[in-house]
Length: 444
Image 1: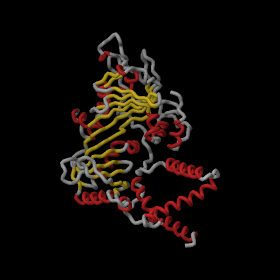
Image 2: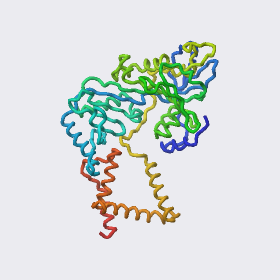
Image 3: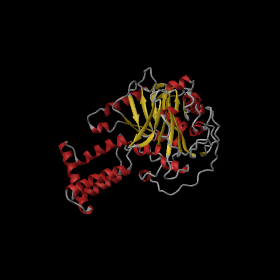
Image 4: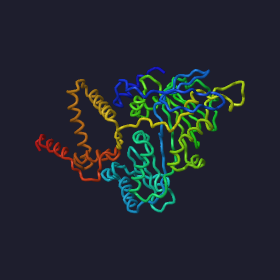
């Protein structure tokens, strides 16, 4: 795969330079067995070479772990918390922005937005950048909480610590009973391979799944999906292309830490396991699932799905030999030391500074062009004055002061971004001093 210039933008958005990272740990290799559906046991390593009659490039592991995790918790919501959430939900439904901005709940480091609506059997929804929590009212015959743990938070602390922190938070909202149940878990491996992922026909996938699809964007092949919508599903896709859309630039330094070099293709193999399948296998609880990752991966890659080398002379597809790349991936040992975790995490959901500044820049340049300014210094001051006049005009139409209008809009964004606690009195000396200075400079 040739170098994509847009990767430079990914690096820039993640605050990354193009310098090479420290050398990864010494890699060990093993040979894949590509016949008869059996595979060699993998020695945990950063790279794995495949030796067979079908030549493939070296496969290098970068990251692996849990990408998506949905948990259900049995218990009973505290009646006082129930009443408080009902009040906050009502505030979120208000037609007044000031009331809406106070639909927040502070729990430890988390400043959750409280939504104006629930979902199916769950009356309340709370969300920040780490958790999306759905809560059932007291007395309901459904789990107390259904929670999605964000993939970004999982890259910071891993699934076990994330679940521990989540249980602690939910314990502040009610009484938990029993262990959490996994509603969905996605296991993934990010790896470097120069294998032509479009180089086989759909028939090469031997699967118990019902659907096999391949995808491309602007004639660029992006990957395969197998069994979407079922109890198990698989995705094999171009992760570099995907993060350009999903804005997951935070993965780039973790890949580099593992030895990725600019220009190398990154593919992700990912399996999704849903609650029905986990319950069928007798491992519905979170702790049980985490103890059986090797078994889940082995079942998915050897029994439920196999990538094969089709043999036109043999009509029995079950006898087709395993593709050497697949044999390597299937033999991954999930007891291998954990892959690199992200050092820092932001619980807020505010857009990246670059995104906000780009939007502001676009507005400034459009205004300057419309008013025939080419010089920034000459154009920015009239723009600022026009913007101030516009805000003042809108505030007057609503019968509020300039300051109140601005504060309402900022508080509303602060709620969405999980940045400003609008339920506490404002004690910002910097803003007060700045306002006093403005009044003085205006001769007020």
